[in-house]
Image (cartoon, rainbow, N blue to C red; front, side, top):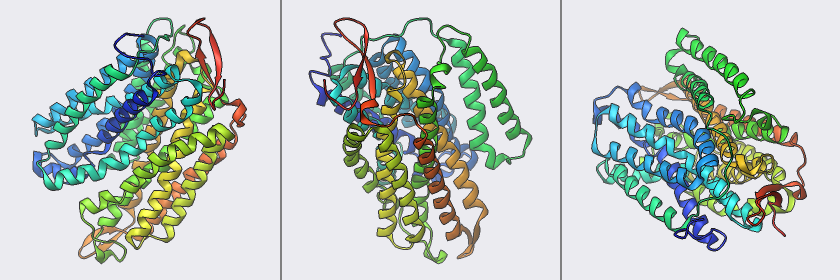
Length: 489
């Protein structure tokens, strides 16, 4: 513990608030360019395919760096790596702010994507530093920032694009990133807990190769063709690299990902549920704005403006902030398994509501908010489930892997939604548009993913509140002891 940074246990509200603010900022960066994408070709002279990389590259770098930086944080200091991640965000924002060249913009967006590792690192710091009775609520809020940022980012970006020069939003993100760094140095302590051993560089390289091949195939397969040699080759490469990487990780003394721990049912099933929840949640963000912007000639579209479509998701962000402590209380009383199961049911109900009520603005907002409410509870419960299944020395890596699984689920969701909306079209006012049935099919698929997450959750071992424990080291003895995550001494 450094003298300049008081312990989180001494100032828990400040530490939790600062980390949550950092999480929201980096999550906003993932979606902030989405409203800008249709205008990128005319603003930069790039092709639409090149412009799409402004979103794809953040997914790739976020997926790669989240587990890697989580492991680095476990070994060399979580706050140190968190600050470095925020620094990368600032550099990426400045690159995007000073240039209109598509190559520079893609490079800047790649750096912004890498900063998503802030969220699992923040969760790990909170686990290490807070008293056990505060861990669940703080972790719930930190985990929910991924969804809060996604909901807030779209309307914020829409307002900026409509009223200011588009580079302004990147200057703002750079300034806020610097503010985050100052706040972290002032209020967030460095965890004294470290995992031993050498950093597994080969393991990190193998994981990177497998993820890049997989996510490139998933995100670009629709444009290249799902049966094209390029797409199938990347899928095959992902499998081969993944198998070789897995064999290597099982043999190395300090692996990048401890596959033996990850294969435990409590951890493996939680990560599978995270993938499915990520899929189910992301459909909500992808289709809501597009649906209300569809012209009235479609028969279901509302012809809403960019700002109105973005504001449709704002109540979802509010719901996620409000429900993260509710999820913590449910987990404290009944266990995080119960919270996750309840969340999956709520998400499925939300999509059923959306299926039948997609003709008026307020019912669309209501359905989207129900889905967000379920997501808030799910995102709050997932890290609690992960932490009770891994030792304290691997918290950063384990939460990074869980966050990665959510990102993979989002990638598969993006590809699925794009395929459905592109293949179920009709002519409306002389231009092709997705049919209402296409959107309704997306809702059914997302509801199905939520129900699959429910089935996986019910297979998790345990589930009672008494079984939810988080391993923490005693500062006085240096030994590991089990701390009940639901509170109590």
